[in-house]
Amino acid sequence: MKLSDLHQLTQEIIDAIATKQPLLAKNRIAKIQELIDSLIDSTTNNEELVELSKYQTLITVLNNKLK
Image 1 (tube, rainbow, N blue to C red):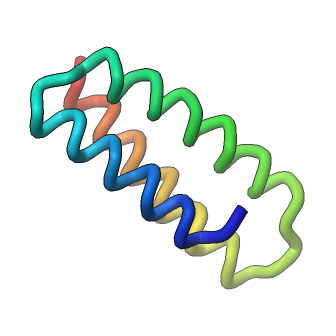
Image 2 (image 1 turned 90 degrees about the vertical axis):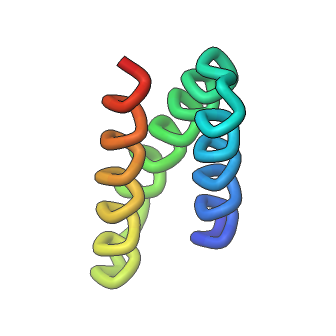
């Protein structure tokens, strides 16, 4: 999994929120949160950790927007 894949999944969440599809957005958020956690656990590259933490923060904000 690459950071570009995370970007694509994040865009799908944003699109789902914009088109008023909260269930789809919540499902994508759960999927991407698992993926980010897995990537954080397996990476040793500090630059990747910084990028992953940015996505993690964005996903948290998007998740809070759905509540």
